[in-house]
Length: 137
Image (tube, rainbow, N blue to C red; front, side):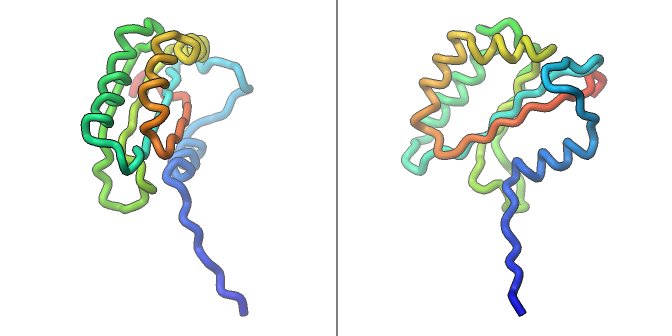
């Protein structure tokens, strides 16, 4: 009899499954009435990064809401989970937009491009996940 092995499921897939169970899907490209678009970015930094390297990324990301007017909300934090399922991801950033056009503007914005230059050689792994959230929450 073959032994079945359980594979570790990436934290982002677990998050995605939970969100899919609690929301209704719409056609691609459609904005959701009464909802905002959440853009979640999680990083695992390279082992050689110093605390100053990581802080430079945190500061640069944190400066984007002042530079990109389509950002209507911003949160950031460091992983404090004791479950041991973060797969090395340590930092999470959540940027909120009114709609998909706001996210598209952000992704093409020169300030976002400049931010990517700060982080690109410091991250070992990045997970990006977008979802619609109720505005009442």
